[in-house]
Image (cartoon, rainbow, N blue to C red; front, side, top):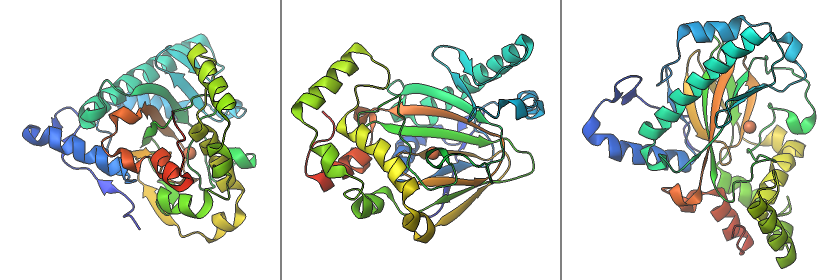
Length: 308
Ligand SMILES: [Fe+2]
């Protein structure tokens, strides 16, 4: 079983690599660790995150927003979602998200240099609610182990990289993880319907391909994307797995910042309040260890291509 996380101490906010001459090699090494299912953790954000911005986020009255899972921001459109408040507050929040997002994009461009200019910038989010005992519907529950898959953003084998920061000044954010993706896939993928998705007809694949070319949102899924959406739900529905699988507990202290490929690392958020997060999609051609990608592992099990 992997150790819970790897503490990064050779890269810092402001100055970057402690030994700039080793930067390229270290960046490649960290990308490989992520792709192999490790979680990388910094004790403090390795990018600018002003105390004033953090305090503003913590000081808002978020209870009226309970209809939303969290507050999200789309950097490419400068669009804030999930907030209904007076326009001054919204402008301020948008500006905080814009700066935060730019800072994390800068981090990834340098700290994970092999991905620079190749990854798609996805959404960022702020999670202002206590995760313990939220009472969400089963498939939306964060406290059940799962791997991530986005209904509206198929990745076609690309990886989902997420950068989290625990903004809570007093309480840790607590996760559970379990065995590596390959072990889970070998045990459960066939039961979850892998062969059915791998056997998608030529007609269905061509149709999805056309939707993709036309840019229809949430369509154009490869068999891999369809399987991963199913696998996300399957794992949450599987009571035996949730109750009896081996678990590793991770406690991310206040201000800890961690990076993880959440399509390959099963995770559950057990407790914690106030996390900031930015997501990236890493295309297969940018991966440094492509054989570790879930789509390649699943293709091996299925004996068929899942991504065209
Ligand atoms: Fe998740």
